[in-house]
Length: 251
Image (cartoon, rainbow, N blue to C red):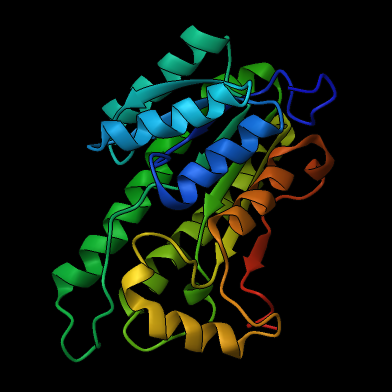
C-alpha cells in the first residue's frame, strides 16, 4: 500500500460489506490505505472473500459477524475496530434489508413500515456506536448510503425511497450535532446499481441505463469512489450533503 495513500492510518467500519456495494466500498477504502472492518450477518464465505481480496492487495482488514441493525451488533463492531486498530475514523452505514418493488396499491404496512424501521435502525445504531470514540478523538467521517429514490419517486419504491429519505434526514441531524467535534456526516445516494442482486433485472437495468446521460447504470465501484472521497480529509468542509451517483439521471 503506498505510504501516501489518502486514508493511510485510518480505520473504517463498513456495515453490510460482505457483498455488492458494501464489498466494493471496503475494497476501495482499503486500496486508499484504510484498515477496514468488514461486516456480515449470515454469509461468512462472501465476507471472507472480501477480506482475502483486501489482504492479497496489501491492505489490512478484519471480519466481524454482527447485526448492524441492533445495538449489541454495532457495539461489537465498534469494540472490534478499537481492539484491532486502536480507533474508529470512518463509518460507512451501508447495511439494510433486501426489498422488492411493490405497487402502492398492493403494499402492506408491514412492507412499508418494516423497511422504514430496518433502515433507520441500521443508521441509528451504527452511528451511536461510533460517536463516543469519534468525539473523544475530535474527528470522524460518517457516510450513509441513501438512494436516488428518496428524491425522485419511482413506481413500486415508496417503501424504499421513504426509508432512505429518513436516513438522509437523520444524517443531516447528525451533521448538525457533531460538526463541532470535527465529525462530518454525508449521504451518497446511488440510483440503480448493477450488482449480483440486481442481475435478474437485466432488461430493466438496460432501459434505465439508456435513460442516463452517461448511458449506463452505476457499478458498485462508482459508489465506492464517491464514498472514499467523503471519507477523506479533503471532504472536511462537506457535511449534511447528499451526493447523487446516478449518471446524471437526476440532473
